[in-house]
Amino acid sequence: MLSFDLDGDALERLATEFAASPSEVEKAYGAALRRTASNIRRLSSKGLKSELGLRNATALRRRLKEYRYRKGRGQSVVLWYGANDLPVSAFKGRPREVAGGIEMNGTTLVGAFFARPGGKKRGVYRRAGDGRFPIVEARMPVADRMMIYLEDEVFVDIDTLFLRNFESEIRARTIFGVGNGKR
Image (cartoon, rainbow, N blue to C red; front, side, top):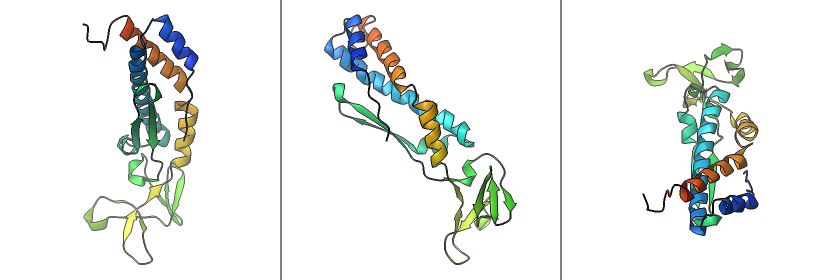
């Protein structure tokens, strides 16, 4: 789990610069935290789709969960990424048969084979037991590539992204009166 410490001095400096009340700071903090989490989800979903070579981002969106804890200044957001292996059908490319299995995007799936179970579309499968049946769709590992991409590309500038969101929220609440019921 990655956690990020935010510069409290920078937050206080922005609050005093815009002469924000404590309630405005608290509301801006929560809104900036939600916006930052949303931005991170969008960036990671978009980037991982191309990095992993997926057909669409549906498989990733199912594996990306956001949890919010507490209210006020002590609130936090946890982004959970499911890094389980993905089915071969989720990836772009054409699998091909090689000695000992199936090769897909440079990864050899040992013991995999092509099948049309029950008249379904042809896919890549593996045997689930010792016998002929049952068979299950083959899966490709993604955890290592996923974590490396997230750490190197997405989470690098999270603190500057949060500060930028916090500053825009403070500005909107103090200068333009957003969120205080006056319009």
